[in-house]
Length: 229
Image 1 (cartoon, rainbow, N blue to C red):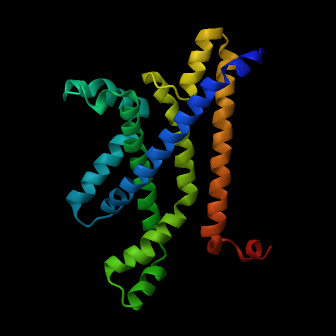
Image 2 (cartoon, one colour):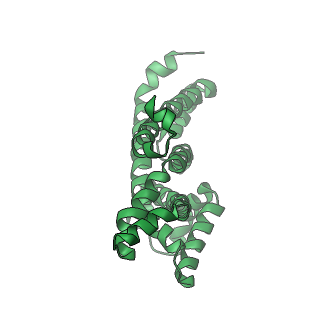
């Protein structure tokens, strides 16, 4: 292995790392905000509203992220005028694709978490005289979000790995940086190995962070022996 490639190209990888982190972070944040109402709509008694949420989730969970990115980046220009707008920017199209994709997966996670709520918590909220909206805002939604943490951590990791498709549309993320380095030195093993290590470090940092969140917010669900230890 030629380690001089790493020392000479670390600035490119640093730029790619920064791009990957901010794009994933923004898409996850906006996607989570969008996913909460979509997940609630999925459980709606109104069949039309529930169908709209189901159709959205079904489409974005049923098609690859790469296809969604291509449809937005390459196909949108056939439907609307994109010249002079953000839609002609690769980073914006990738961000929109990431948001729409992660919102669908997260909405399904939230829907399942709401449906798995213990009936006793809901009955206790009613016993305190809370309305349905108050019970949802104070009890159901916070409890569902806490219970969704383990499943949502997987979605965050999948989003980090899935963001590698951004390099295909000229964005210099970690994968894009590896392609640039490979084109300069013709060393695919070293170029992509270092990018893979960066993804691995980011993944383990996410796992560590979610373990801390789960230990704090799901402590009441742990066995008594684990809490006392």
